[in-house]
Amino acid sequence: NNYLQLNNLVKDFHDGRGNVVRAVDNISLSISKGEFVTLLGPSGCGKTTTLRMVAGFEVQTAGDIILNDKKINNVPAFDRNMPMVFQSYALFPHLTIFENIAYGLRIRKMPKDTIRNDVAMAAQMVNLVGLENRYPGELSGGQQQRVALARALVLKPEIILFDEPLSNLDAKLRIQTRTEIKRVQQLLGITALYVTHDQSEALSISDTIVIMHNGKIVQSGSPEDIYNHPADPFVSDFIGNANFFEGKITELDKSFVTVSLLGSEVRIPTANAQEGLNTGDEVMLAIKPEAVEVQPDTGQFTGKIEVSSFLGATTEYKVEYSDGFLTAIHPNTHGEVHNFRFGQDVHFSFKTD
Ligand code: ADP
Ligand code: MG
Image 1 (spheres, rainbow, N blue to C red):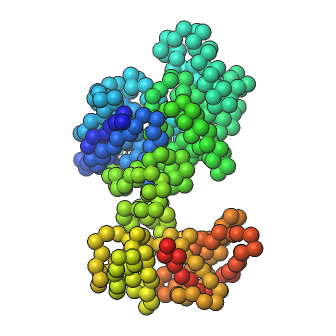
Image 2: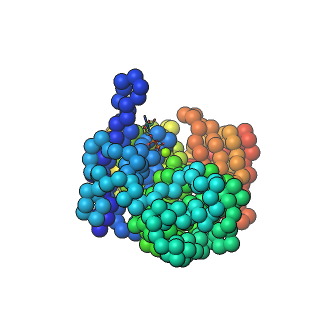
Image 3: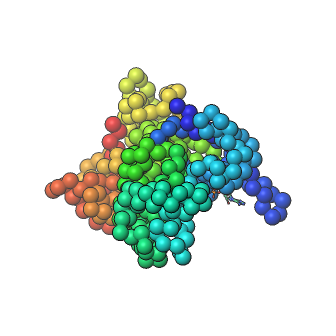
C-alpha cells in the first residue's frame, strides 16, 4: 500500500546573501500504486521543489524518498523512470512528434521495432495519430501537451510527475486535457503525482489532495473530505473561498451549536462544527459561498449587492454588509434567477445544513 513514500523531506535553498530558504519543511506522504495524488497550494508553497526531489532533479536536505520499500535518495533521475510533464511542454522544437515521443527510448538504446511500436501505441493512447511527422511548432498547445504526455507514457513508467501541466492552456482546453490525463492514468493504472495551484483542477482530477502551505502539509484527504471538512481557515479559504465571521457560542447541545454574530443568532448542526467547543467560546464561522442565500425582502441579515456576476450555471454575488464583504453563489435553476442589481438592498441568511 505504501508504494511511494516521502519521509520527513526537507529542502533548504541558500540565496546569494547567506540566508537559508526552507522551501519544503519536513513533509511526509504515502502514495499507493495507481493513486492520483495532487499537491495543491499557493505559489511558492514548495510544490515544485517537492516534485523535483521525487524526480531526482533536486537533492533533499533531509529525509527519505522510498519506492517499493527501497530508499531511492541517491538514485539519479535517469534511473528513477519517473518522467515529468511540465507547464512549458518542454518538447524539442527541431524534432518531429514521432522523434519527440521516441526520445527516451532512443536514449535507452531500444531496438528500432520496439520504438516504432511503442511510439505508435503512445500516440494512439493520447489521440495524436496522424500528427507524427509534424513539428511541435505546428501543433496547438493542447496537442503539444499530449505529446509531452505520450513521451512520458512511452517509457512505461510506474509514476508520472506533473508540474502544472495545464497552466498554459486556455480554459476549454484545460478541461479537455485534464480529462485526457485522468482517462489515460486510470486506463493504465499509472501512479500520478500532480502539482497545481488550481482548486477546481485538484478537486476534479485527484484521488487524494495534499494541501501545502509555507512548505508544510496542512491537510490531505479525498476531494470531498477536503472540501467538506477543511482542517483550518487557510484550507477553507483556499479550497472553498469561504466567508469568515467572528462570533460567540451562546448555546450548545448534542445536535446544535448556536453562535451569536452580527447581532443575531445562527443555529448550526454540530456535525458541521469542530470538536471541543464550549458555551462562551469566541469562534470563527467559515461559510461557503453556496451556503449563503441572498433574498430580496426577508432574511436574517441585511446587505447591499456590490457585484453581480452571471456565470451561466450559477450567479456569483459580492455583498457588502456591516462587517465587510461576502461572496454568495446561487445556482441558476430554470425559472429561479433573481438577478439582483448593483447597489440593491438585500437580505441574506445561511443554509447551515
Ligand atoms: P511552488 O511550486 O509551490 O510555487 P517552489 O517549490 O517553486 O514553490 O518554491 C518554494 C520556495 O522555494 C519559494 O520560496 C521559492 O522562492 C524557493 N525556491 C525554489 N527554488 C529555489 C532555488 N533554486 N533557489 C532558491 N530558492 C528557491
Ligand atoms: Mg511550482
